[in-house]
Length: 278
Image (cartoon, rainbow, N blue to C red; front, side, top):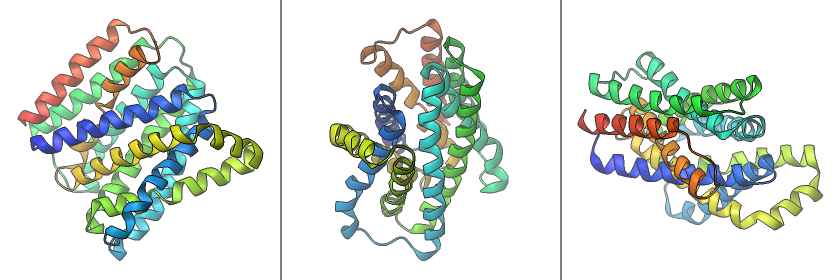
């Protein structure tokens, strides 16, 4: 994988960890997830007039992605309510690339080299190592995390293929961002009522805009990278976001770090080095 692609994916991973931390630190995780999704849509709007429309064959993938993104944000909020981030985040983000690696051969016809496969598996193993440090997990949290890993793997395929068909990965990403907040806020209105939703938006719109811009930029960089490198490799490298999440959890959220975090950091860094040398 070229160095410029690796660096941009890593920058996207930093952005991904940042918006996840915003949801984790919030008082209402479901509404914060909807707000960040809306922030991504708002951040996308100014750029749409300057980009070509995605090719017609990409639009069904945009529609399917919107539904999957709705499920993803709902499961993120539910999983963070049910379990400790040290358990939930690694399982969601670590299991997803393993699913992609195991299935990309017959779904996309992509066959990784030995080095790329080794790097991908090393990164995933490092992320999953973090689950051993969780002390407040539950069976419900594990089920939610693994269910979301399946959703992540599915939309990785949908968007990886859709971005390639669209002719422009940036345009695909921005158009794809518009529908999920509509679904999320429609659900929020039905569950909590317009007054509660409007109050939350009024008090937290700045966090939503910052997190949303980071979310859409992070995913756009990943989709662009998938047009330059195998989907499975990019999916694994993107999950190095857990390293940035660990730094944020210790320095910003003031969570305690165990030896498992540092061990995982070494394993993930080794996986990234293997990918660069592959």
